[in-house]
Image (cartoon, rainbow, N blue to C red; front, side, top):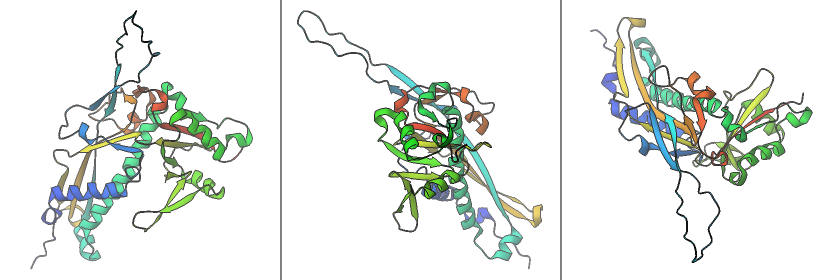
Length: 323
């Protein structure tokens, strides 16, 4: 009797499969489990039209107060508005398994695929955010949110507690409203050597979470690092990154190639989301329907629309060894 391997499409309801991945990705995401991210899902809803999301806002009130006097009228001043714009990101990934690998391993391929997708998307969200920040934080209008000590002499160019506080000072009276710090693994190693790290347990007491000066520490080796030993560290305030997602028309699809690798099943997962630094407007025109990583990291595609201190992000550029 011929052996007919169970196909992905026979094992999974696509809608539930998508829900599992989205839920598990949210659990794994260090970004979305921090106070630096604010939910903007109401901006997307079920509508996928257009390539950007418009986020109008009221600008801060300005001008001196007015004297109350019965010889003159009070002047009615208008509240100025502005528009922040975020690009919509449409991405996909495909995973599969051959019949032979499933038969020989005796493992649950579906459970593995769900976990692989979730871990992949959690990493990818961090990667995309770093591409966005590479562009948005390098536009000239964001220079007041950048501290670069890498060109200073000797120890003055090296990361330490004092220089970190100098970086947070870029936020003025918003500097106490910090949520997270993202560093390269090399910077994290230096911080540990300097005994600058504290640890807390997660809610389930299954692992310890590093913190720095009371702020969540996100360690990612894809953080910018130059061949000359110059590193970028990002300092994030509460709610500085807007995140939203919606389900594409076909978030999950299954396929089978009976002749490839002795027979294999595969599953396609599509994501539609926004990950945006609040107050830095996207003004690029992508070559395709959605911007790629190169376009996201291009400074000319971004423009500041909030006051600098209201953009609660600082790029801190430094070295780890005195030159």
